[in-house]
Amino acid sequence: MASALKNLSSYDENNLPSAAQYVFGIVVSEWNAPITHALYEGCVETLTKHGALEENIHTVQVPGSFELPTGAKILASSRRFDAIVCIGCVIKGETKHDEYISHAVATGLTGLSITTGLPIIFGMLTPNTEEQAKERAGGKYGNKGVEAAVTAIRMAALRKELSMPAKTIGFR
Image 1 (cartoon, rainbow, N blue to C red):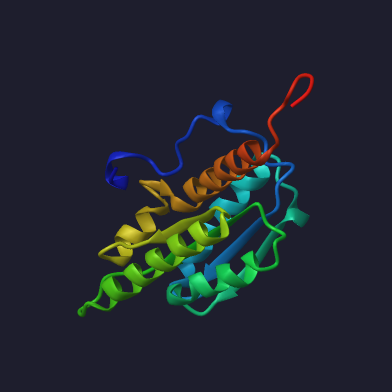
Image 2 (image 1 turned 30 degrees about the vertical axis):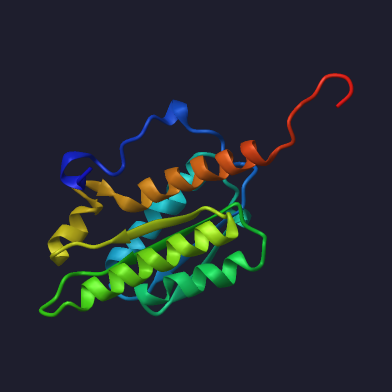
């Protein structure tokens, strides 16, 4: 669904599990810093609002969105995290550069998530203009960082729930 049709910060708080038991990694792109830092703030505020301990939120910065998959891979290889959120912003320019970067990041993060079994959350904006980016980083369409945090909490809980051994009664 297009963010113009849904506020990125809207979710059912009663339907979200506690984040208290989880450890989160966040990879933030330094490129378009005013946007990515606003997304980051929304993400961290949402995680802590739902019980994540500050000491269980670990952040690394990478130069640009293209480096998000590598940053996520470095965090994932530590095996300390229940979910990793990747935050970036690629604004369309005069060339197709944005398409190559966006495709590479999406493909890289998807592949990493599938191969590791670790939820790697795509918290990257791909707007046409800086104004559209601002509208999705705390503006009229909410904050994609909030949406990414909610997704991380839900996916961490799903992973934990489905990786627990089945309960049995009696002998197997």
